[in-house]
Image (cartoon, rainbow, N blue to C red):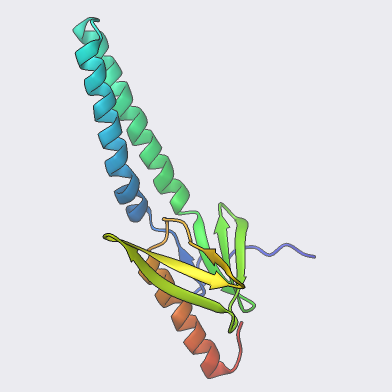
Length: 154
């Protein structure tokens, strides 16, 4: 079977959002880096230069982790092809869900956090946090409406 190459400019494709990844991971990373640095600053009795260097290293590693998540989220893709929604991570397909009558999509909320739940065949799938759940829901709904107009599902 020939390998299909992803077309990142396709209208039937939704890419992950780096801003969403930075917003969700960045705050936690900054909080953890500052707490580690504060603990080190208060309880370690080394020279001031060493403590500042370690604090900068903690903040730098936190920034590097956040930057890595943002870059990787840009390579998280949802694509509709041949009547299926395929999820890719760095070009590798991670999940494929047929878009037929058995698939349902629900927007749910826990506290202030919203997420999309895809249910098919008694199994639930929650796409990762790189996607804006409302945009993904609209993406699938718009494709389903266009498919019904054309009489196709692909």
